[in-house]
Structure formats: C-alpha cells, structure tokens
Image 1 (cartoon, one colour):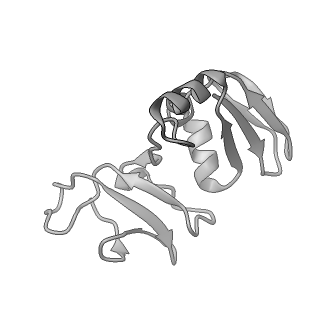
Image 2 (tube, one colour; image 1 turned 120 degrees about the vertical axis):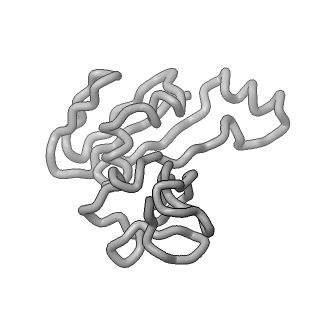
Image 3 (tube, helix red, strand yellow; image 1 turned 180 degrees about the horizontal axis):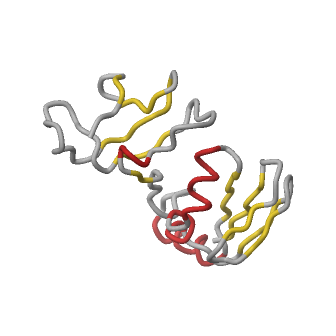
Length: 138
C-alpha cells in the first residue's frame, strides 16, 4: 500500500527506516509500505500519538486484489493500536481522544505486576482503561 505522511508540526522531521525528511507542513508519499513498517517505526508512532505526524494509507493494486478476493470491501489487514508499556506511554502533549495499547496494563482482577495488556485512551491528563475509566496501572 502507499502511505502519505504529513508533518503537522513546526519543525523538520527525519524518519529513519525510509530515510526521509519532511519539512513542516509537507506531505511525502511512501510506496509499497506495510502497516508493520509504519507500526515498527518509533518516530512515526510517537509522531502520530503526539499529533505532529499524520498517516493516510491507500491500497495499491495488490491490496485491491486482496480486497476483491476476500469480499471484505475496504478491509485490507487488521489494524493494530500503537503499543507501549504503561511506563512508556507518552506523558506530555495533547493526546485527547488518542488510543493505544498498554502491553502490561491490568485488566479488572489482575494484580500489580501481572497485567496482560489493555487498550487505553487519553482523557483528562491520563491514559485510562476503557473498562473502568480509571488510570491505567501495570
């Protein structure tokens, strides 16, 4: 698939991996990139969470063939949330409405240090667990 990456920030950003620089306000298109490539790039992940980068993906002809074969219009691959441990979830910036996955976050009934992972969202200055609207803990 192709991905358009836009720098919404006020400074130039260098993204290792694809080895590109994107000026403030500029968009660059990367061809033949996978969701794993995007998810595995720490600069892209942190930029998206911080709101300084946005990523828009477009299926290419190979992806379109997969869609027509699967019969699932608009579905190419499962989408995954950006993953962090509770300790590495971004703590500064405007993240209102953002979601992520805390790999060691605790589900209801899990004890301290025994979290098996939970999806979380940013609200009111904290990453919160969907199930109880409480701050996430490891």
